[in-house]
Length: 395
Image (tube, rainbow, N blue to C red):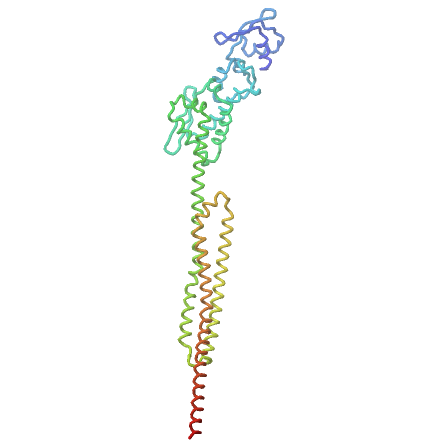
């Protein structure tokens, strides 16, 4: 029916508005059913007792109630905070609600924004037909009256409409995310310097500035939060791996002390007068068996160190290339400690086998030196005997 009423109004030769009445001149009435509907709804003020064309005097207030609005001012005045459920037509724009019109798109975007801000407000109320929201964040509070008009809508750019939609989606989130809370805080900071009645208009006209400011603050927050979280995680992981690596030697300390002790006891028990005595042979064999047992323990510690090294490599592989700098910095101490522990285990390995081998080598040298002395003494004795026999023969 709305479209048929619009067609009748537009069929007039001219129309004007006088004190709340829409006067349509020289209307060719062809839709008698629509005229009857207008009369039934008390929209028609004058009586039609003449032949067409006729003049129609229509009450604008009742036309507004069925969805016909003479201009954007009347439309915003009647629908400032709620989008009409029924179809509507704005004469000034020559468009219906279903048409793709910039003004209507901006209007629906503003209504969505108002509803989203109410969603994050602590309290909302209406005073003298003006809807208000009280927004709290930490120790800050903002009173935001939703005051705007058709001029505010006309000044909104297409780019601002896109940003307005993004901000609306953030405020409509059901979960109080860090981003949502940060945007609320930035909204308060952005609008507090403005006068109360101008705050919402200021937000609409500077939507791009607010969105850029809020996003910049969020990105800064994300960078700091991510860096601190990453640094804490890396430091904790580095400390944990350092403790595990250091435990390799720490666990072996009590067993490694036995190496020099066993060597000292073995040397003290050796019979250096009789190198190949059963006692010496037993001590040497026992010392090699002891070294073999210690070597098994050292190999076990080396396996544990390799397992830890493998875990460190897998952990490092979970980070991307952009985090390598922080990773290398945090794990520099761990890598150095790993190299040191490998060297220490190699040193212990060589000492474990070096001591019994050195002892055997020393005994051989002692034995060889004693054998040379014995041979020399026998040679001297033989020469003495020959000399004595020669002297006896001369006499």
